[in-house]
Image: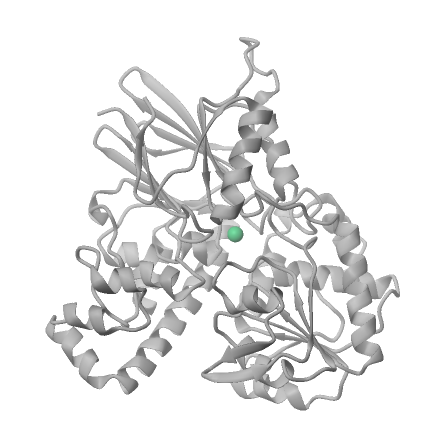
Amino acid sequence: MGIEIQFLGAVGTVTGSQFMVRAGDRSVLIDCGMFQGSPEEVSRNRIPFAFEAGTLDALLLTHAHLDHCGRVPALVKAGYHGPIFATGATADLAEIVLRDSAKLQAEAEARWRRKHPEEAAAAELGTEASAVEDDPSLPERIRKAPPEGMTMTRAALYDERDVEQTVRQFRAVRYGEMTDVAPGFHATFHDAGHILGSAIIELRVTEGDRTVTIVFSGDLGRSDTPIVADPTPVSHADFVVVESTYGNREHAAHEVAIEELAEAINEVAGEKGVMLVPSFAIGRTQELVWVLDELLRDKRIPHLPLFLDSPMASRASDVYLRHPEIYDEETAKLLQSGDSPLVYPGEQYTNEVDESKAIRTQARPFMVVASSGMLTGGRIMHHLKDFLPDPACTLLFIGYQAEGTLGRHLQAGGKTARVDHQELPVRCQVRSISGFSAHADVNELSAWLANFAKAGGTDAADGRPKRVFLVHGDPDATGPFAERIRRDLGVEVHLPSYRETISLG
Ligand SMILES: [Zn+2]
C-alpha cells in the first residue's frame, strides 16, 4: 500500500473537517470537526467513525473552531489514546470550545429524555434502529436507510470526562518547527492568520522510497485581520487541500467594513435602538471588540454599552490575552503603548442566563454580541424573540451564514422567522458586513495558492502541486473556484466526495 488520503468531512459543505492520510499501516488524521448548520448536517455527527479509533497514530488540529475539533472527544471515547498535536493557543482554545460543547450536549440530551422517555429507554436497551426511522429531525434519506452502525441516540456524543481525557492528550507545537508526529510523518505548522493559534499544516509523508508533501490550508485568514498575523505563504507541495468557504465571493476591504460598522452603530444610537450581533465566541468576538475599541478611540462612534453575552467568549478572550507572542505587529505595538485593544471600555460579560435575559430591560441604545454565529442555537435565540419584531433594532451579520441555517434565511431577507416553535415577524433592520470575515475571499485564496507557482528552491522548478483538492465549501463556491484555479495555476483540481480515497503515490 502506498500513500493515500481519505476525505471524511468538509466535502460539499463548510463543516465537519476530517482528513485521513495513510502510509503503509500508519495513519494520521487532520482535524476531527463537528458537522454544523442544518439538521441534515448535524445528523452526520451520529455516523460512526470510518476507521478504528485505536489504530490511529496521530491527530493534528488546524485550529480550535468546533467544525475542526468538535468531534475529538468522541474519537477519544471511541478508543483513541495517542497524541493530539496543535499549537499551544489552539490547545487552550479547544479546551474551552469542547467543554462548552459537552455541556450543551448534556443539556440537549436531558431535554430529549424528558420529552421522549420511551425512545430514551429503547436506546438503552439497544433497540434504537426503529427510532432512527421515527426520528423526524433526521433527513429522509438517512431515516430510510440509516448508515451502517449508526445509532439513533439523542444522547450526547461525549461528556466532560471525555474532554478531560482529550486535554491530557494535547502536545503543543510551535509555528515553523518540524515535528515528528508518527513514523514517517513530519508536520510543520504555519500561522494561518484565521484565529489565535490557527495553522496551515505542511505534512511530509515517507513510505519506502517515496516522500510526498501535502499542505492543508485549514481555514485561511485575511491579510488585514486585526490581532492575528497574515496567512503564511507556502511555496512547495505535491498536493494541497485548500478551503473554499468564499471561493465565489469577494469581501469588501477591511476599511470599508469598519466604515459600515460605524454607520450602523451611529444609526442605532440615533434611533435609541439595539444592535444585535451574532458571532462566533472564538475569534470573531475578539476582533469585533478590537475594532469597536478603535472606532471609539478615533471618536467615530458614541460610547454605547456593550454586552458580551457569552461565557465562552469571556474565557476565549482570556486565552487571547495569554498569548501575546502570536499577535500581529499592530496589536503588539498598541499593547506596548499601554493601550488594551482587546478590551472595550465598560464591556460587560453576562455569564448567567438570568443576566442574559435581563439585557432586554437595559436603557437603550446598546449593543449585544451573542452566539451562535449562524443562529442555530445558543443565547442569541432569546434575543431574537425580543428584537426581531422591533423596528428600532438592527440584526447585524458579520460572519458566514451556511445554507439551511436561520442566519442564511434572515440574511436573504426572510420576512418571518421560526424561533423555538414560534413564528415571528421580522421588522428589525437586517444588515450584513462582509469585510469582517475571518476567511480569505476568492482573491486572497487565489493569491495564497499562487505562492506555489512562484519559482523557489534550488532546482529552479516552481513548487506547483500535482493536484489541488477543494474542501470546506458549499457547492456554489467550489465549482467556480475550481475553474479559476485550473485557469490561473494550470494544475489539476479535484472536488472530493464524502469518504472518497485517493492514492497520492
Ligand atoms: Zn475556522
